[in-house]
Length: 104
Image (cartoon, rainbow, N blue to C red; front, side):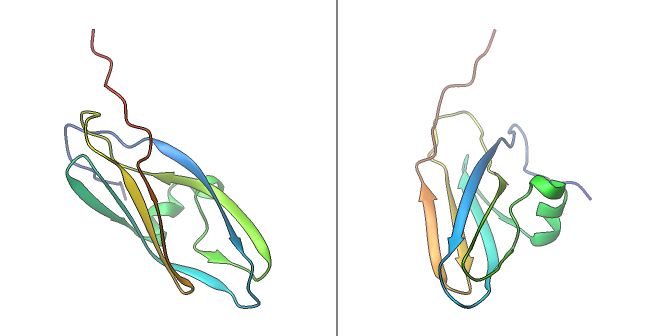
């Protein structure tokens, strides 16, 4: 299986830490990234391609997990963000650093 993000584009990674401060297991139901004019819905199976470095979709009570999350970049002029739809609610990280693509 491969992650298809469309062309011309690439998919950098950023590291996320999530704390579950409740006494219930938290699950990530959907992980949606947007940027470069496209939304990509990453499944748990997609994230497993990153191995142990990928963000886990299950977070035990009173614990912190961390892992890498891909997002889509096209030409560096679009805003980028990631939405986490979890069993404990929705939260998002917006306005990830945007930058111009280096061209020779």
